[in-house]
Image (spheres, rainbow, N blue to C red):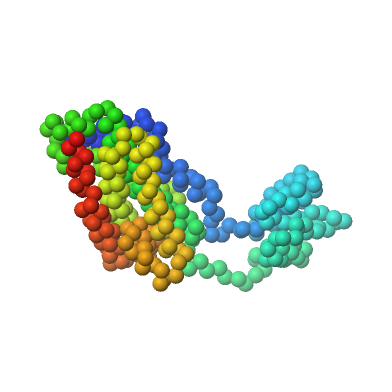
Length: 334
């Protein structure tokens, strides 16, 4: 790598490490990965929650723990208070050497029936070994909601890479070093490349980290990185134009958030709308990125499809480049 380009990149790294917003962008993938793992259940996790007494028989509690989420409380009043809360939870309390099921009355019928069935099975000593059921997962071992959240986080990483570029350019404008670029040996193209490295490197490293931490390490990394590089083009362009046109860090960060609107709109359109409405999202590069990432995370994407979606993103980015490039060039000349 050219030393002058490397110098620009290293300066951006140093500046980012002492700015809170830039530092947050860098560690965002790790924080988001931890949040996903904490709050998204696995495919095999039960969605039924049962409230019980902690001093109840251990074998009784353990039986229900095998099939549902169990919350333990000290007294019957604590269980009743918990059941009366807004979420759907059913209580099981002892009464005259037996048990009764406590429900608020507005729980879904399926949840109450599930708890009744579990209690009946426990009473008759029925266990999973007594069944002839065979489980089939069709290869889907990761919850769909987890895949969706990781997909969105990957696209957010590319946008945040552009925001990082904008913040660094604003920082240079504040230090009055961007104007000095015109009288230094580095070319304008070299300066742009040096500035773009951090906007690409951070999303790439962040995406790989996120995939490993969330259990998607076995996806085709080359396909994912190909799509990520294509998506980053528009983020980088917007990062440059916002960095040049703004003199305040918060203003630049706020303006680049405009990319969140088409990003989230593309996700909503792809997931919620019927096929006849999908065509209205074709001009949005994030729409193709979301569909490609979904196939990659599902390990069902062929190189033909991924290459086609990548070509769509690059073509749209080329149109954006033709519109924005003159403004970027003009801004760097002042």
